[in-house]
Length: 395
Length: 139
Ligand SMILES: [Zn+2]
View 1: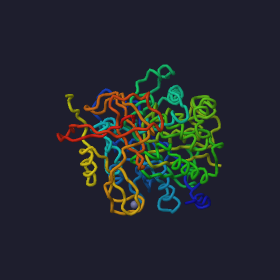
View 2: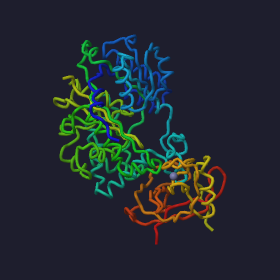
View 3: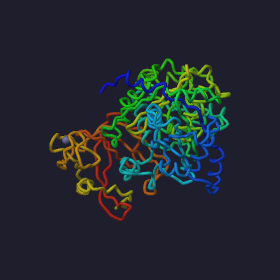
View 4: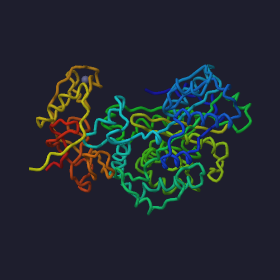
């Protein structure tokens, strides 16, 4: 079904991000690696993120009248954090949470919405493959393929990358361009967990986990919290700590047919990603040529190739050439995941990317600053779902 | 006689019984919708094309074509030592089936290569015994 761009546009320029808060990823990662007993749980991480975001925005907890909880269970988190709310709901992904926030603000249900994310995956020993992998009825393929050992998230992406290599001639060295560039960004980011630059040699020496993907293609697993505070444009203009960053566009894409057989993924998720990207562009009134920096949900690096094609940045099968000629690292013409992303900064389910986009658009990204950043685009693709978000400076 | 291998037991949900009973007999049967003929996999209570609950456990050809693969180098399951080659191939009847090629060599694979399902005795890690299916290069 076609969507009406005029209706989509009613959601743009409604809400602005006025506060960001992120926990100390490096310190918490080091403590977990050293097997120190956890000092808090996901609610504690959520609280730390909220506190920092309130300080950043120049707001008090009593100013928050709406909440969207991401990953953390929403009923318990609002109780633990002592929030007095008018509107509250749970979401998982960035585009879902942002849609709920826009709706709460545009409908007048809430004026100041905290999007609160927290996880304690590393300290709680969460498994993403093998006998104790996360599994439920909702995602059958997480356990259906156990007899053949095919249960890990990375393997689910490795088969897509292998098919892409066969179809379009992508080489191992070219996959390496992605984690190398993101590590170069991370080396400029004091918040990043992994900051030592890596070379192509390092990449090619990195062991395969599920070939063709190597350890350096895999994201980190760490504890932490991120909060974004979103409010109406009017209220945002009255806050003076930072320039408000406007939510310009949000897009959804779905392709569920034969999802447990990996059919959408083996088709490079073209249907769902194209739809999500186009919705976000139409809502924001911009196109790929207007984007200053691109961010993606990098649980595994190989996804960037077909994602760039599906978002219209380059033609089908040409992503490696695009990345090589433009440059996606520091100084490149097409900056990607400028904080280091989930490969090198922190695994925050894409929420750390939102904070970095805000910093870039505020002009507060320090040595990583993309000159004159105007629009930042975020894209995620998981199983049968794609989501897309575009932020911009206030005009 | 070579020793029977152990593998992680399959999911045994409400609709999975007939699939594994057939596999134990060396047959690959999937649910074919009685209304529209669509073959679904993994087993489920309704046809995703027409929502009919009526189906027949139809014998599949066992012939497929390679869509992709990966090789596990990290050991996730104690029963499955690396490297293990896992292949995703599309059955002639439509569904994409995931299974491994024990001892297989990834350098022999390419897209659309014909493969066929084969059956071998297995001890499941829940103590039961039966057969498991694998992909094999079609000769
Ligand atoms: Zn049917």
